[in-house]
Length: 202
Image (cartoon, rainbow, N blue to C red; front, side):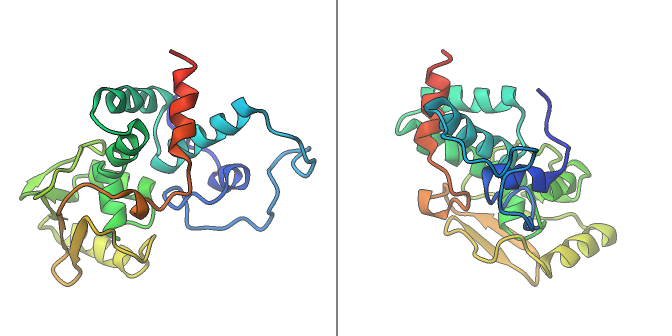
């Protein structure tokens, strides 16, 4: 299944607040569809599926990409759920979003794909690039790039900067100081349920 490009509020009505997907809030609090207001008891599978879908839609991943991240997290030392969240948080598109250079993760992905972002002085146009501690992220030395990012900085998606990042707003220079800690993940999610979801499929 490819990346979702449909109505974003439809997804947030079903799954709850997804800060990386959209800044808009739905006027209706119940899920979409003809039977959206009907109360249905969720099965264990449904609960785990919804948690997995939250990760997918918030970070803008395809099913194949998310599965690959889960496999990578399993091979790493430590808690699989925490490592999974760290892998997703350290993606370049998400890092650009958390620095406030874009209003949403899809907006950050577009910035990266169009070559507006540099890492250590070199243009990187791969949204899934894994940022590493010590790397410096800034905007490309072009008037169009700077104007675009400066406009985005007026209305950042999230107000709080995570502890593993630092950012100079006047110079538009960000730095990665370490890995993202669990309490700074903006998405409300139970990552253990995501790991359990995929463990049933292996």
